[in-house]
Image (tube, helix red, strand yellow):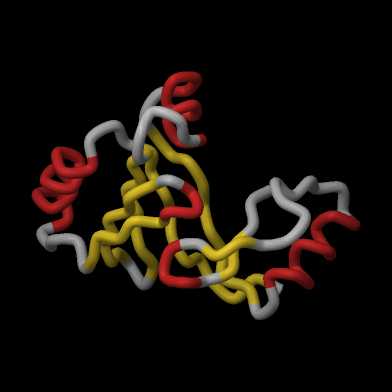
Length: 117
């Protein structure tokens, strides 16, 4: 089912400041910065070890990421694994007792279908 680690997403308050810090640590700038309007976030992507580190900042005051940071602070938001078929993987994990956030996957960064557990 799982093909590979795709990315580790880190919730941040200030994308620009955090991106500067990660650029210093990793020695490379982000490969791209992208808004994901459906999730009300802006994401900076850093290649690392065959996967990516994504820094994720909420856009506006009313977004799920702002709520996450308010409750838990900045830090790891999610770990993403690439799968061949996100719908089949969601169904398989549901059958194993995991609960998806959404009934149907949504379009995330890069135009990929995503779901969260």
